[in-house]
Image (tube, rainbow, N blue to C red; front, side, top):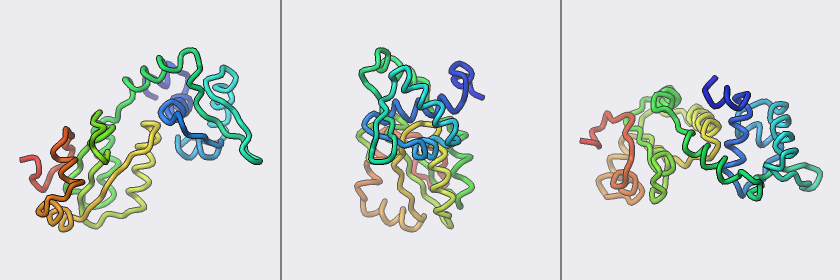
Length: 191
């Protein structure tokens, strides 16, 4: 259990808080919140109901379902969001560990929201061969649950990446020319 989980009482509470705080304009059912946070439905229900009682979230009916969304009028909303923004980060080793089992990874770059570079169009650039997309999607969902927000990513085979790099592909140039963090580089892009 990480420090925030100990401070706030549970890992489920921290993950659910991140989801709500970092997705202000989204509305979640209990099932959606549980799925996105990677917590049980019961934990999601418990945390969302607690947040609704203290008015951190708004609880509304959407058809036959109940949805929850951030209440930016909550007295400490901005301070809580700023605190979580400053204390939420992925450990590089966690990212590598999550992604490396998805194929033969040749290049892994962090950009965008993961480096506080909003100009970049993606958060993760993954280059490799024999990448199993289902495993990669599962790994990305796990990382998103830890961060509390969706990640945008692009994946390329080594051959496709080299071709795109050679023709000055705009997406690749945006990532490579803006600040980024190189986690894996077996191609020599950072040289």
